[in-house]
Image (cartoon, rainbow, N blue to C red; front, side, top):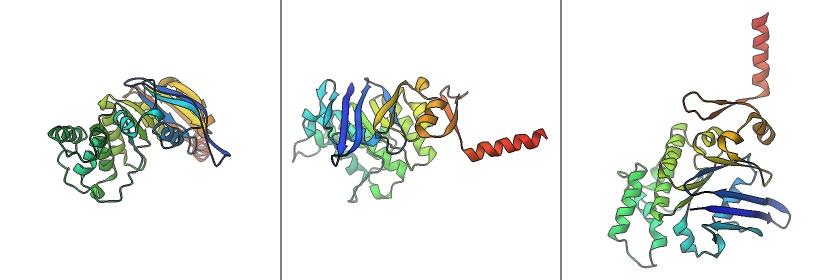
Length: 270
């Protein structure tokens, strides 16, 4: 699955610009990260791609086809979305949540088939939730809920996965589990990520957003630098190559921590 967004612009209330002339590309099998400070336009761009926020200008295509010309069913067959938080109002079981992913492949009153059973069972097994299918979704931890939502996306059999800050508010263990799982799937993935170290570890390429625009893009190891973090995020950082992962790793510094370190050096020197 190849995803392209060209010259995307979105304005709300006729005066507030959320996106201005934004373009990106995700190649088949890539994991591409979207990073930037809060309010930079990451979620707005993703919503434009998964058809919640239609742009006034620009074109978004999946394998060359305009996403806004696809039917709802056809779009769901090609693209699955996992958001930061799952707004579920009714108490479904894990199994029922995952079976919702089969909806694009069924007619309105069609019952579940043996093939549906097989696909959903495999999806739950892939996310390590195969023995939890009768549990209430409401009783799951944040990490377990996200794994179930990924299983539902797998049951859709879509080739393109959109992740809108899927690891926010999760413990580090669950953050790593979710991103390890996504990477193992081998799908085409576009993910808005809050944690730059997660982006450095898991993304093949990055697009950096600020004030509704793309301000940098390229291979992850080329994009992440102390200068970019200072300019876009407004913080001082040191970017090093981690000796165990071989990936870039970011250490942040506040003015207070730098001042404290300077005082400690002075004390040691005297």
